[in-house]
Structures are given as structure tokens and as C-alpha cells.
Length: 158
Image (cartoon, rainbow, N blue to C red):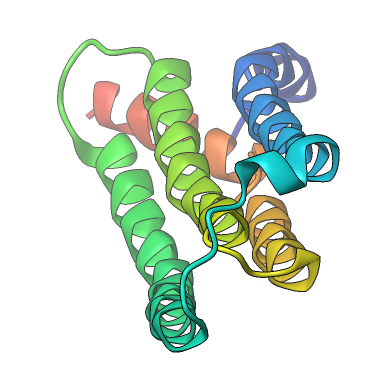
């Protein structure tokens, strides 16, 4: 069990994972701002039926992305605890957070793509909102990080 002092020191290890989340959120905001500023120049409208097909496929991918990201994150967290090696716990956890954020950021990119293909702001906002929700769900969590440290410490003392 990590003591209070060790937990405080470990919190500083989470600064870099939080920076990854902030960068991804900034990218989401950038998509929306770019679409508002340069919307007409960006759009290359496709026929309605083609757009509907692409939108449906991207919605299906977005729906699958959430449980898939959760599964990949769960597997990575367990591997972080059990995988032998000298890689520091903070590096392992940073990789887990980065993979989760990249997978969820792709949902926001879908909205940007659909806007470029001629959809309105509503589709952009839906995909961006889903991506932001995913970033909230898969944000860095101190308890996950502490569990990795504790499991690795326990393995060292065996």
C-alpha cells in the first residue's frame, strides 16, 4: 500500500498523461474553430446519399470505438502491472493513456471529415461531443496508476 508521501510524489508522475489529454482537447476545439472560420472553403459536398452512408459507417465505428478502447485500456493496465522489465511505471501508464486518447480522438476527427464532406455543424458537434466524453471516461486516474506501482512493487519483493 502506498503511503501518503508516496501518493503525493506519484501525482506529479501524472502531469505528462494529463498534458496528453489537454493536447487532445485542444485539437478537438481546433477542429470546431477551423470549421467555423473556414467552413465554406473547406467543404467539398458529396451527394446526400453518399454522405448518409459514410456518416452511418462512421457512427458505427464510433459506437464500437468506446468498448474497444475500454478493452484495450483494461488489457494495457493489466500488462502494466504484470509485464516484466525495467520500464518505469509512469512510462507504462503514459503509453496506456496516450493509446486511449488517440483512439477516442479519432471519433472527433470523424466529425471534421463529415463536415468537410458537406454535413452541417450538428454532425461536427455530435462527434466532437462523443470524443470529449470518451476523453473524460478514459482520463488519467490516480488509482489506476497507484495500482500499477503497487503491483510492480509486490512483484519485486517476491
